[in-house]
Length: 74
Image (cartoon, rainbow, N blue to C red; front, side, top):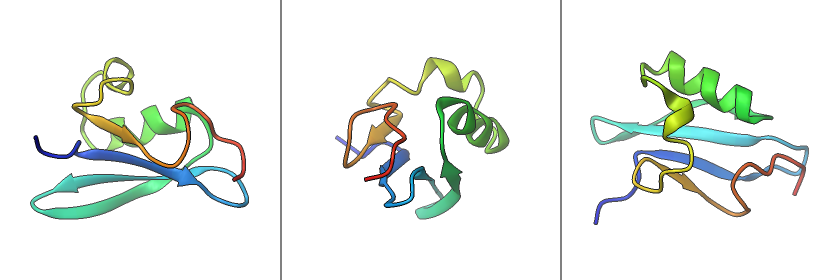
């Protein structure tokens, strides 16, 4: 099985999580999300339709280093 194209990385020491998307074989940083709202905005900006529907789908989004939807500092 291929890895999910969207990765929400582990929480940073100061809070927030880096969000990347894999396109054309390369990882593109979308930004540092501090909330579910930030994540949805980044995904919309990347052209993903209805991102609210995929954030909990492991086929699309991999949450690394902490629970999904946890935004506090590491």
